[in-house]
Image (cartoon, rainbow, N blue to C red):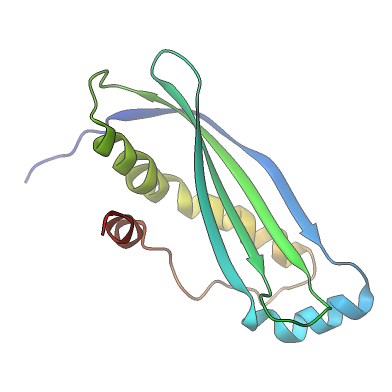
Length: 143
């Protein structure tokens, strides 16, 4: 069995931004009834820092994409600062590291924080049905 060594080290991670927007009581009641129609969005961006260090921002949002006017909105931007161990990493290796390996590492914690904030906002039965398959998303991006 081959043991994979990580090509990066997580230096730190933090919640960069957390937003729960529920405009009023009417919207809250409507959102609670329709929360199962909300969809999860994902965006990943990077900011090079220095000396093989990169800040990776994983942004999740949960929103109603329908035309109705009464909507709540939930979003988290989660920053992870990583230090690369390999100075000569190819662009595709780095991309895979950021979009797959790192996300698989941090996502369980990120999802827990995000779900807890939505539950604490008054949606106690909230759960995300689908797990994000970062490997599959990465392969789709390549094709």
